[in-house]
Structure formats: structure tokens, C-alpha cells
Image (cartoon, rainbow, N blue to C red; front, side, top):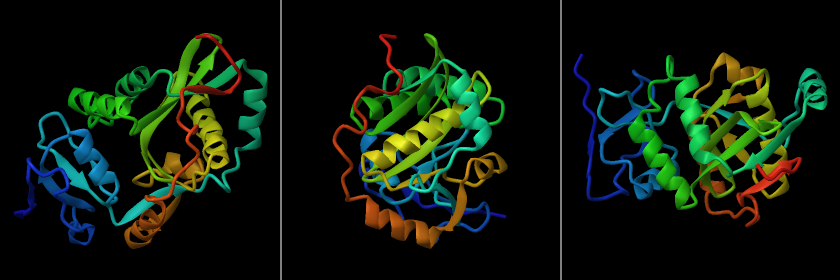
Length: 239
């Protein structure tokens, strides 16, 4: 079966079709081409769109019919996670090691998530340097053992990927980030597509239309200016 995808204008980073035109199969595939400039990435996330493609594929842009979301206002860590965290010398930081976090995500998930290509990593590192992408780091002593990264859109945080080098490290990253995020005015975390792992973390499904409605409400709102300043949000260190 032939699939037609509208090619994006490489000279216009705002050029995206309506998400209502996304394909049913494969679910959410919307457009092809364009670039990975910070301007293009910002425009995509502000419309509920994200890039997802492999090494040997062109740029592909998606807006699936169902989104996985986490409400930081109601997120509750499990008793076992609380117990585990109390017993470990765990600290959590924001935006101290973005490059390391995305590289670990690509390495740990590389066998299954080939979309974190070198080109993708370079693009999000550039977006991070411009203040649009952020990381959460989990430390044991002075060793980075887990984390996550994503893109901020108003009071919405679009999670991209997470990693763990030790048990529960990525769960602790999410837990502590939820607490920090809601404290500074954050309202919703987008996890893109529902998986069994995300459901165990408290993610719930939301239709595309409802997600876009929430996105339109949140993308022009402002969080506390200190939300994504480089800082320790659980413990303190000079690492």
C-alpha cells in the first residue's frame, strides 16, 4: 500500500500539517522531511508533534491517536520505591548533565529504541543549550545512575526517554521531577505513547483531541522561572 506524507518545507520551521490528518496506520504518522533545528522542534512540540525515525529513515513526524500522560499533581510513588529511596544514598539534580543523560538513554535503549540517533542527540543538545530541553539526573554518591530528558512547553513537559543503571533509578527521577515540577507550576507530563512500563509508573491514556486541548491550554502559561535552573532537588553535592 502506498502511503502519502506531506513533505515539510525545509525553509519554514513552522510548516506542519494539522494533527487531524495523521494516519491511522501506522498510527499517528503525520509528515516527512524538514529539519531538526531548535525552531522546528519547538514548533512541533507546541503542536503536539514529535520526531521519531531510525538511522536509515528520513525525518518522520508523529502525533498518535492516543497519548500517555502523567499528572504530577496526583502522582504517588509506590511504597516499595519510597522504602528503596530511603535506604540508598540517592540525590537528584536538574540540568547538570544533559549530554550524559541523552547519551545514556541512547546506549541503554539502543537495542529497542533506535530513534535516538546521533543526529537526534545533537539536535536535542542544541535545543538544551537554548533552554528548550532539560534533564533530570539521579546520583548515588558521585555516580550518575539514572535520569530522564524532555522538552518544556509552557506548563507541559514532554518526556522523551529515561534510563537506569541501577534498580529504580529512572523511577526516582520521575518521582522527584513530579514533585519539583508541580512545586514550580508544572501541570502535565506527556509520555508520548503508552507502554506497559509507563502504565506501571502511573501513566494514563488520553485521546489526541483531548491532549491537544490540554496542550493549547498549557503551552502559553508560565512556570516558575527557577524550575529548570541547574540545581539539586534532592540532596546536595559539588559533583
